[in-house]
Image (tube, rainbow, N blue to C red; front, side, top):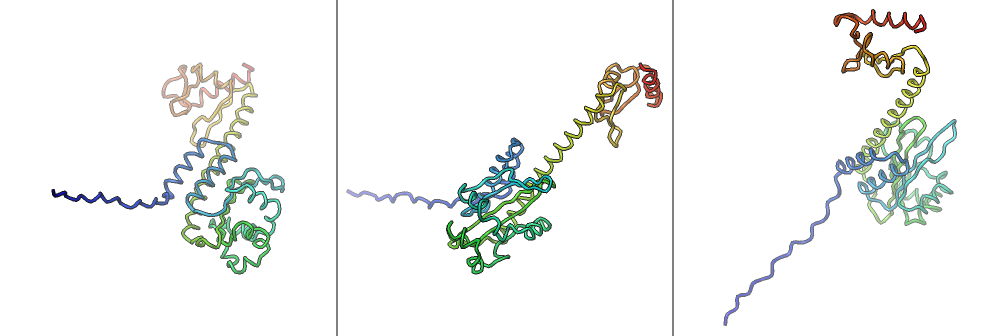
Length: 276
């Protein structure tokens, strides 16, 4: 009896997972940042994305807030809370990358900083920052940092560390981190400006509502940005003035459709002067 031998199907070797694309990570992060206003959550989301982009042994991010010349920690995120607590409590003052000159130059250039550009690993091992701190957490001899301001009072710092048994941070990783962090800072900077403008507009609106005379605030293109309650009543009535779809003023129903704005505005001013 002949039995044909059928070899077992070959099983392809497991494919190595490809590292996530920086563009997809950045897009996911920017989308997530749009859904939160919590400074702590913003840094947590940012750090998680950065660590996925640039693997490391330790990492943290923090935001400083400077008011009247006094700086204080506003929010932070880290891979190891004990590492970050020790850093702020005892060792930040002797960190070569936290020196004011290094930070200012990094802010000016917009580039991330490699620790080996300041101190080669051999020299870093002789520095108190390594001997008293980094050596205790796995002989961390490679560092990468980036600084960015979201407004004049707020500074965000990202720090990544690798041990001597890992490859040093490459120039490509430095550029990727800088580009990544710059996009995040730009998004947060735009949000700060938007909130500032909203606050200023609220103050203006509150101010014009305090007047009994009709007040309309126009932008440089002539569109109505806001108005007080008295002007709102006039626009709602629509006899002297009305708003077109593009928020531009037009003469009301009492005037010819081709009439200029001077006549209805003059009538309203005269009525206001008479106390009406």
